Length: 187
Image (tube, rainbow, N blue to C red; front, side):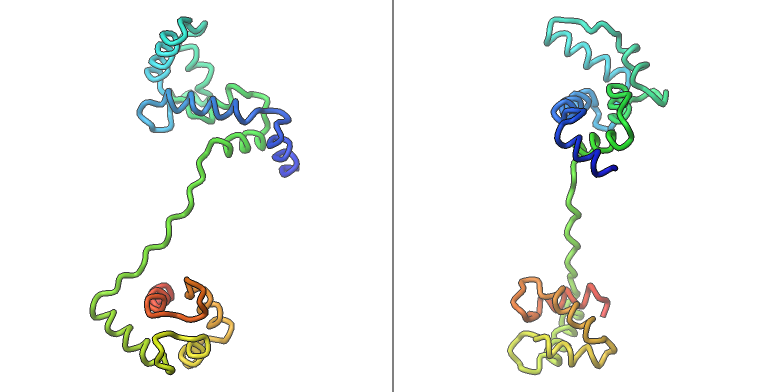
């Protein structure tokens, strides 16, 4: 049912995405200190600005706006409260879809790369040279199987580790990839 409702909302069946985005932009403009909440002074300033820009005063005072939108009576209005005040008949699923329309999605930051000390780097170079039986400056999957198989890893784990560590997907592990592999796997 939730998927069907979300599909209906996406296709504009009940609420318009543009309206929700406009409401969010108005809320963000009101939220002068960017704390995610609008207080009476911010609402009052916003209403004065709108009156000056449009030449029309709101039929409601800032106190009336606060009373109508501060649904939990904590003295501040969150965007979700504003949304619920404007759309009191929306279902919880509809509220979630509307919130998703105006909530930025941030990608997870890339994991920090391991920066070994000079001593650690020297030790890793020695280990890499030991594993690099062909002496070509790279570790193949077979070389990694021999090295890590003797450490107790099973073949599937080694193959997964190789695939995950081969960042440029050239089917071999260079020294830089090896350093990150060792740091990520606490070897």
